[in-house]
Length: 70
Image (tube, rainbow, N blue to C red; front, side, top):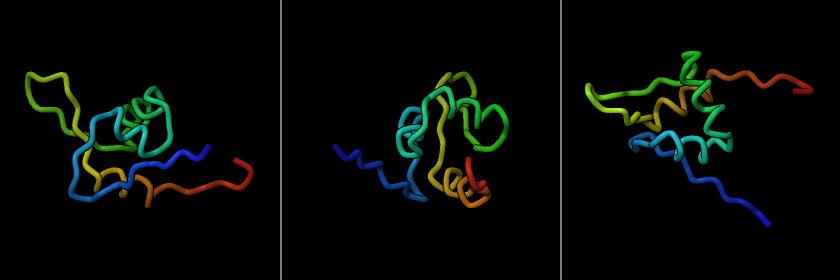
């Protein structure tokens, strides 16, 4: 059974769950990436909802170094 990840679009806005699915990581891993500053988010005043742009996801991936044996 093959799982197809959603395509990350620069001009799109994603929820935390959608971003986690697009990256193929758990929601807790995504929250850790946000907390450590690897992934930038927008949070409107007075709202709990967090918005993540496709551009922010792509920038994070471009700045990620894959280590051998990881």
